[in-house]
Length: 275
Ligand SMILES: NC(=O)c1ccc[n+]([C@@H]2O[C@H](COP(=O)([O-])OP(=O)(O)OC[C@H]3O[C@@H](n4cnc5c(N)ncnc54)[C@H](O)[C@@H]3O)[C@@H](O)[C@H]2O)c1
Image (cartoon, rainbow, N blue to C red; front, top):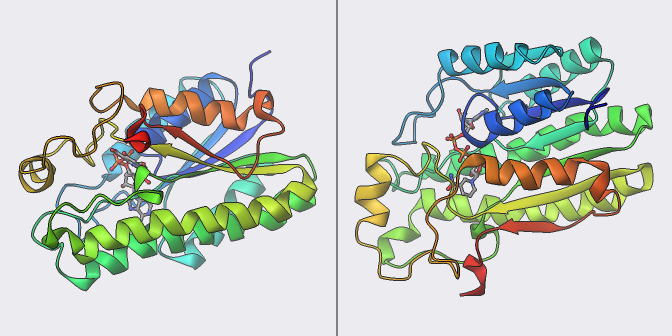
């Protein structure tokens, strides 16, 4: 018996990076998995967001575990698209047990960071998109009455400021922090209501993770390049971690081992927020 046998999971931003890692782990441990991803460029973002090839190749990898798989091109900024994707997954899989609201962008650096579109996209994807996802899955979770787990991906920016120079007060950076802070409120309120139905809602709080979001020339040049010593340092003196490290925490939050954990933020940050 695998840990997630008989469970179904829906993961936004699942084409690559942390979302892909979470999807693969859940599938390996028995879950049927639906990944949603824009699989296209977000205009205000300097680095490449995922492609259709990313979505298709993750879908192929997921199929190797033998469970049911859906890979859906879906922009979480579009409420109707999120509702339709959720309805399709519920219909095909018979319901959803695990929801990972993970899709995100970092529009904090690069040529368009000073445009208000960078704020709009950040908030639309990482705050509105999370709300649309939680709103869409809530009736099904309650009606199904089988419990469940939701994990929202926050960031150390949910709790601490990171701006070390005036130009970091740009719309992209501020939108990122505002959205990542805002999801804590969504987490607490959904946890209060859904807990009455056995559904737990938590946030995972990564520090640096070695994905395209920070492993790209723009981040290196624009942010990390002139950062003062100690910027985003952590007590363990470790650099960005692999996505699987975040997956370890996320899968625990989705499992019965955390059955009484709800309304919490689980930091996998090597002590970043202690400094
Ligand atoms: N990488 C880090 O250092 C770091 C640190 C803390 C938190 N996070 C958060 O972790 C989450 C996952 O990011 P990652 O590190 O895997 O980066 P990533 O860029 O590899 O993955 C993000 C995924 O989200 C998708 N996405 C973007 N906009 C979308 C939209 N509108 N609709 C649907 N999908 C969309 C992207 O296409 C991509 O596949 C994000 O919420 C991010 O903010 C990342």
